[in-house]
Length: 552
Image (cartoon, rainbow, N blue to C red; front, side, top):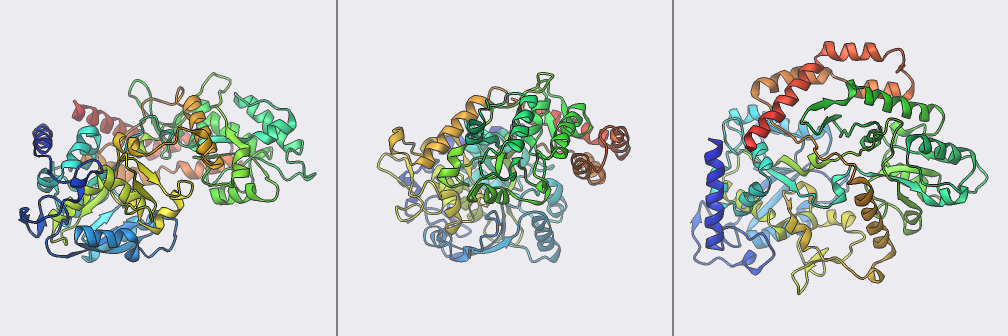
């Protein structure tokens, strides 16, 4: 059944290419905006061109708030007006806060029967969440509409078959559409980087550390020798937020991501919290914490709290982990911080987290049974999967008075490149709208080759990205553990066991010294096994193996 569907996609894609105007193009050409006159109509939906709806329609769309509570009224946002003017689709946004609120808001909508027409960006609600509602008939199968209207979706599935796999239900229906990002030569595939204050190193005559032992000595020197020169012992050698960043485990040979799973080069699935490398990592960072080398309140602060300490009259932070400094700090402060190459421990381990698992989220676009126009919904989504559509989704409608526009060479130019990631929420819900950051998407962006024309902030950003690629890519694990569907039987087992596997609480206790890594580790492992951690590892392995078989 799956093979027939995939063959059908390929045939449809070829036919669409020959037709030239099947759906929306994957670029930013004029055919995106062809005006409908005598195009065929099905259920008020034009089969090609713009507008999409023949007569005006209104969708209620529940969307995850990715803007960190900006308070923007997206009913009045430019993308909402653009969708009404160009697509003939009026949108009423129902904004769901992030975190566990996403699950709660979605569950409430389904259980009450007061469902929106569409759900967007409601991660992480995969088939484990939706399947019961699918069986109840509350979620629509989009496969027939994608086959007819989904040129860009079909191309995306061809480029990323894993996305099709994750979006395909247990009955071979297609109940969701994804967010997909290609990480071709993109430091975004890294789980941030470790930054250090180069000015402090210079003030103390220190070299860049390359090993965990050298790093500890640098932190001790920061603590003892007043590198910020204010005569006060106010330096925080290493400051962290909320938990130990995943990349910092890399020096101990475990390239874990947020859920602490990873895949080795042989295709074996690992759960780090029951392995020795994890214990050694916690021991190292616990010792740093107990010696005052890590900020004492790190479990109770955000990255914004760290930025405030750095932006004070005198910076008090020596090292921290983030995905970039140019967009978070003033130019003067950002200039002081440089990328630390991945550290090596005494056993010679050296890696860094590859977060390509973030490249695909399957639950980005779900159409409920309340939607009377699924054809229009899929055509709308298909546009956002084009290159132009993805820029529109992420940064709002194009225009020289907005955040971006196409120049005469067909390249995307940002009107405020330094602040686009902050200002975008004035135009669109952004990340939560379905999109496909393909290779073509990346290549469409204009890149200034003359360094002298870049602002100081842009030069810092480019310098750091190049340093991350040069230092981290060679040691980054090549095989990140992808998302993979579980069988229904395994899903039930997983849901029964996983809530009891509380590695977070134990990790915090170990790091803060509230539990002894020397005296309580064996009891901790025994308890994890009693709770069923071996079953979870087996389920993850079976899911990954099943995914590989599907690809074949």
